[in-house]
Image 1: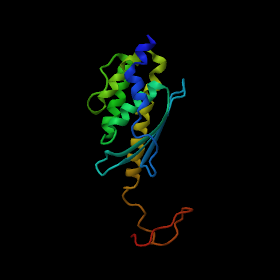
Image 2: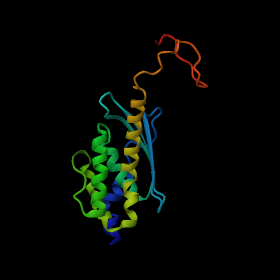
Image 3: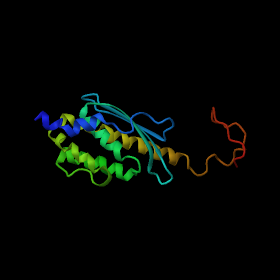
Image 4: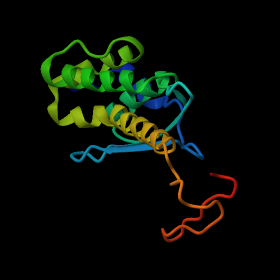
Length: 175
């Protein structure tokens, strides 16, 4: 039974981690830890003007199942949208917990993790990569929204003056 779980395909994926490492200036970073086994993934992303992932890097310290799932995510993350990543996460959970078909489209490769469904203690490990990606992309989107807040800085401040907020200076040239 354990041979089914740690198939040659799973072990091969685990040994070939795409986009390993960290990005120097990510727009968003997500971290996920499987509490039961300690599998951990940290994902950095940068997004383009269309809110798609333009750069991706991951640092994964996990069992073979966590590494394999993260490798599958890493193969297709660049170009993905927030909606695609959320759907992949939801479909992966449904596959593992309720016998669903698994992710479709860009993240269809995660169906290779279907045999993990029979091992509930391994579900969280198989999810660390996609969960960390979702967190990173959500953070990147929030950062983008925060930088686009209308009316900031407030109009009653004169450019170059020190704001009433400690440590904040209004940039010269802004009205």
